[in-house]
Length: 116
Image 1 (cartoon, one colour):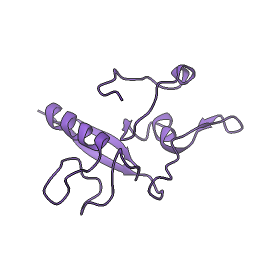
Image 2 (cartoon, rainbow, N blue to C red):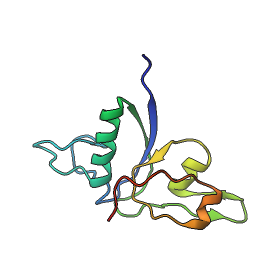
Image 3 (cartoon, rainbow, N blue to C red):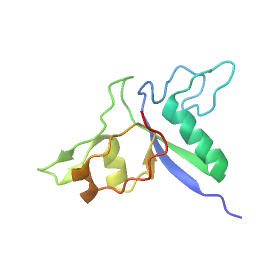
């Protein structure tokens, strides 16, 4: 049986995911990394349950300075983290997003599995 590979964008954006563990990204808590991040841990649980491999895609940004993405009217495209999805360079993003009705034109939202 072939395993599914999920292309995931990772940004250094606490508390979604921390970069203070030995390996970035870390998806599972351990003695040396007790809290890799809430979104990272959820992604790890889902990938393990579904038996999926994670192909990490790294955003180049300082911790807490993540460009979540916005639509550039002049270029007619998305930038930032959402740009990876828009250009089909990634399948999902390891960040917390709020549902915005006007983004339905560009993106399909999944069923929420976690809510604050």
